[in-house]
Length: 155
Image (cartoon, rainbow, N blue to C red):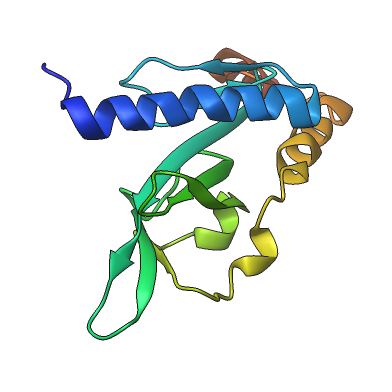
């Protein structure tokens, strides 16, 4: 399958940038997943991050906004990282939002001010999720989840 030159490569570059930000800001290891995975980055082999990118849209009049397609109502990631790209191809804002906040939604739109502004640059959510998983000895892979479930089922 051929990759669209402008959109897919641009998104791929921002996934790389997100991995770097996670390493620099949090000191955690991030690795990009294969294109068919339902999320883009796996952090410390436990936290699933999906990266979304939107360029600036102009609505009727002077209203400007960013819109992101979440793909599905039931999210498969732990954290979303949303990059808002202005008309100069610069990152204007970055939202880091736990997927539970957006449960049941298939679209996110943010204007110049938004109820989601409290999630701007909240990278700590990624480290908080990682710490929770490690502190509670939760499995960091599907095989680990299967082993955990089988322990309870086979009692």
